[in-house]
Amino acid sequence: MPELLVSMSYVGRTYRRGEHSVVALDSATCHILSGDRIALVGRSGSGKSTLLHLVAGIELPTSGTVTWPALGARETLRPTRIGIVFQVPSLLAPLTVVENVELPLLLAQADTQDARQAALETLDQMQLTALAEKLPEELSGGQAQRVAVARSLVASPRLIVADEPTGQLDHPTARHLFDVLLASLEGTDTALVVATHDKAVAERMQTIWQIHSGILEGN
Ligand code: ADP
Ligand code: MG
Image (cartoon, rainbow, N blue to C red; front, top):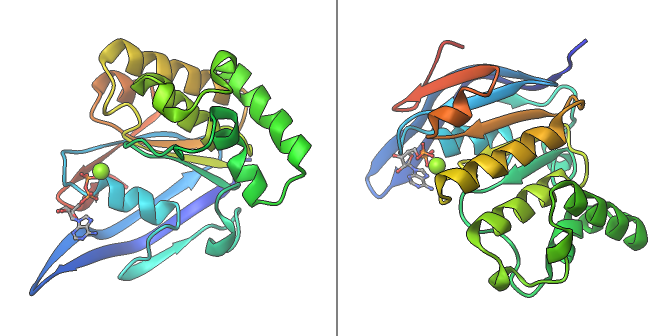
């Protein structure tokens, strides 16, 4: 039986900007179950990042409720129950690739040897073993995003939230990143929600959510 990982009821998020306010998300209701593969599609500024940040518990709604029935309280979600991949480079510059990847486990107070072992295994799975001792500045954009994906996977989270993870990559590199991400989730019930502009990516997912001007359709 799939488990209910995230439940959003009538969730809104308004940002204040001086005297104006922007409704980034307007009364969104949706559910994420274990094993789900969801593409979140919408134009720039439509509210994709806002929705994903609320799903991951990074931001709080200004109306409505978000709960994580099978995951627990918001404070306990990251970095091990929910993994996040951002659009922009997010590796820590002074740390090597393997140190970046083991970080979620160290933050969760795993044993240092176990953390290193798990990081090396995840790097292997993502075909990144040769880069383990490199610094982020030595990586191409595609390699850096693959490392960020490895970091999001290392603690075997129940949900991966990826915010346009291939947005800054050329098409073949984007496709390769997505191939290894999907391959590494195969046979697991880890859910994946990915915001994307890329039709080819969206079509490989089981469910497509459309968002227009803060309104999530068809949920
Ligand atoms: P997307 O990821 O689809 O491009 P976002 O969720 O980033 O959309 O943004 C939705 C809307 O909310 C946009 O109009 C954006 O300018 C606004 N917005 C997002 N974050 C903030 C913020 N921190 N402060 C003010 N406005 C914001
Ligand atoms: Mg965005």
